[in-house]
Image 1 (cartoon, rainbow over the protein chains, first blue to last red):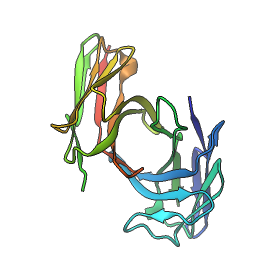
Image 2: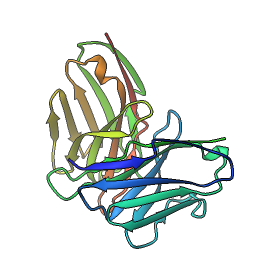
Image 3: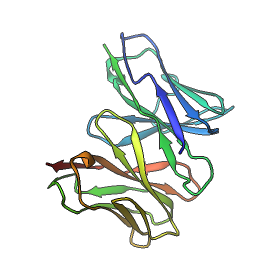
Image 4: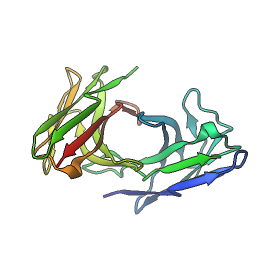
Length: 117
Length: 112
């Protein structure tokens, strides 16, 4: 089945620095990827939809300048948390739409635990 | 606006028991419904996908049903095992949209 690889799995950074998270679709092309944020004991909140070759679409309330999304190729989307602050500490997960077929759902990465100190 | 609700929020059962997790959604105009499993600190693993035209899907000990008109889905787990302990999430896709709308999940604990 489709596999989405997300790196790093954990990152600790100092307040004020930037962190980049990568999301790769393995063995299939993903023109659209999705970035979610998950708070403790909460469900996933969609942050933005990443479109290959064009600007990302952000959900209401998500700061575009803080969460920079780049989808430069059909297999890679990146999320950069700029000028990170402790309140940005969270679990970030990406997903991609499965390639067309009998099982046309979504595949998720393994997530990134970001801790800003 | 689509809302997805999962009941119960948490469930603890002894090993071997059959159990049912519930998911309801407010807007029946869905494209599909997907059940996921999430282990602590991990990403989501897809379990079953039901297209809007389907009534159920089965995979091993798992069976998911969909009643689109009433806005309900159930995930049935047969002969539960401690390894089934995880949070189970239900999500729907609206027709015309690629966005997934998630419920808050049911945290399942299967005791040996």
